[in-house]
Amino acid sequence: MKRPRMVVALFALALGPLACHSSPARPQKPETVSFPAIDGNAVLDHTKVLASDEYEGRAPGTKGEDLTVRYVGEQFKKAGLEPGNPDGTYIQKVPMVAITPDPSTVLTLTKGATEQKLKFRDDVVVWTKRVQERVGVDKSDIVFVGYGVQAPEFNWDDYKGVDLKGKTMLVLVGDPPVPDPADPTKLDPKTFGGKAMTYYGRWTYKYEMGQKMGAAAVLIVHETEPAGYPFSVVQGKSGEQSDLIAPDKNMSRLPIEGWISLERARKLCAMAGQDYDALKKQSVTREFEPVPLGVTASLTLHNTIRTFESRNVIGKVEGSDPKLKGEYVIYVAHWDHFGIGAPVQGDKIYHGAVDNATGTGGLIEVGRAFAKMPVAPKRTILFLAVTAEEQYLMGSS
Image (cartoon, rainbow, N blue to C red; front, side, top):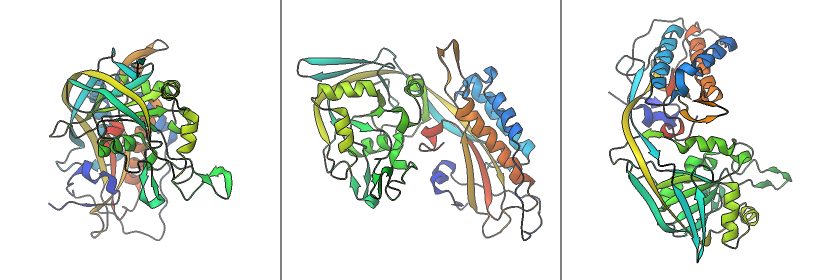
């Protein structure tokens, strides 16, 4: 079977080969076709179900997944979507691993005889994607690398050939906020998309660069505005995390990934004899060069590991044009959230109404609208409700 061409190339590897299924004939395209209205109340109804206590926060590999996958599959069918998986079902199996770090983990920062001990969850949130019970770094030199961006199309390189093998990168979240030459109060729309974040700004990119550079660890400084969420959201990643499991047991991944609070990042820079705000200001120029801080990082992660099989849910509206229906336009939302964890205001269920029950409900209703169209689109439309959020789809939500 030939691999179909993907209009959205980002998801081609996640999907793999997809079979074509026959669908009822539809009228040929008239001059104009109105897209059916999306029912906002229906989206709200889906959100209420998916974010209910019964669904227990929709963590992969739990009862919440079972309920969610069943619900989304049933709703795809009711909406009139065809099964999108090659085996004729709505379900795509996804081999995964869940890793839980020991919450007693401590990150020790050392400069000469001076030490700072950072508490797990309060000061830093760290994890590994490697399927290992024990992962750590020992006296790893910390290097500040600004925004950690290497973007030839913008003539931007924050690394300048620095050797980062075995070292710990301290990196800023987001794209470099380059001022507009015509109006310094605004961002340059021609560099990193202006207000729109590029992939260079995503936290997943920062870890990928750490892996590329041979670093031992990457710590991203959390700031609420550029991150788009408070540190409490990062703290939600302090429990079990799920990811795809590769044949090499993810040993090619960066050993240690994590976030550090802004307050602790400031103290780290002060410990190094540096000013955090001054370093940040330098980072918004092409002339920026990495700054070794003269501080080392040491920590050991003791992990609890379980492997399991999670699921994506796939529906489709098959294209009408014989030449183009092998191309796919993909609508995607992740169905999962953080499940059950430490109580927040007395509630231990992380319901995930906004992130991402609303998106999943919207996906169902957009699918219903496409299925109602009197004329099928020329290309095949896929509706993909995926597990494990950023870990599975390279940070795209």
